[in-house]
Image 1 (cartoon, rainbow, N blue to C red):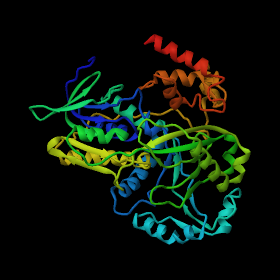
Image 2 (cartoon, helix red, strand yellow):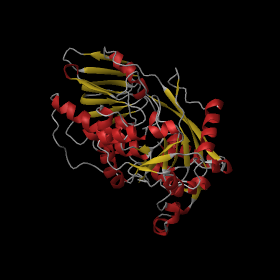
Image 3 (cartoon, rainbow, N blue to C red):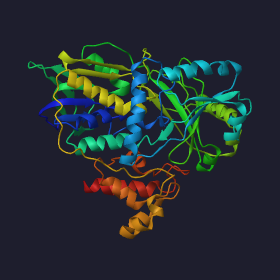
Image 4 (cartoon, rainbow, N blue to C red):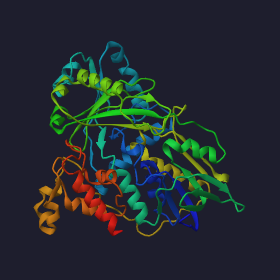
Length: 463
């Protein structure tokens, strides 16, 4: 054990986008908080491998916690992202029907949207659909426009949340998987990790794929996480002009279907698949899954056949046997459950944090406002906004912003060094990639990988 800890008011387990948002929310008050994760970095699990959409919640099941919090989360993140420098583009979505049966579901989808409080949905006929998306594959019957759907950066969002939490006084414990929880005589909880013990009055379980395991450590058995693997294909930036909207599928009982969408990084993203797996570490891409996506992509947009694939990846969603988020508080036990947060977690993250804060206040936790809340400005990773290599004023201030290291993504030495001095610096290549876009391009690090690794090693040697 290398760390010891004084009493905390709240410990949040899980430093994905949801746990980081909760830590940020609580750090606004005079509380002793800690954010704990088994990984080496913020957002290094499920949060880094999603479709990066900002959902309106138009298609959520009415009356569910998810429907309410996605709607509120869309509002909160839409306001927060520009202030924090998180790339967000409200490019709108078109949900496409590819059969008469799918087209017949439109009235029900519209009714659901209205029940969820989203009234801007409207039907577009086949002529308008093809006028707006000339490269759409043949055979579409029509579409539904959802103008407020958007794309957002999945990397800088949890990093911004966690950075504000840390600057606000929240302790950050990484490489600290929870191996046990003990109830102490005074009613507090003692959390056991390989690097130390934490005593806390309240424990918030936002452990994602492992939230069911932590739930059982606390004597509950409310749900079981059944990992659902989603494989995705990233197309080269030359494919980006093909599409200016998110293309959604008519959802099924188990999946939102395969979508095609631009990314804030300037690519096109195709996916995900939806396959239940047993292993919570199985983020492999499969021949079958990628072949299925490829065939779906060519059906949706045949012109994709002319474009190169930059990358493939897979993420695991924390699906459970329940159709809704598993959000509840056991106040006498000091336990808050935040489980079953699936593909809409990014969109709902700030609203989930707001909800958890309100539940803790109702349970008796005094939320006394702290000093002026810290704010951060994340480095711009968006292709649509000026990057440092194209900003003469920044290069004039620091020539390193004119020294390109990664030519595929136009990442400069200055951006890499700035990441090392950020509130939560990267400790590996994956963390550096998510802070700068380095290694994300066509060559996948073939050209710049050695130089980037050397910079990381040099940084590690200085610590």
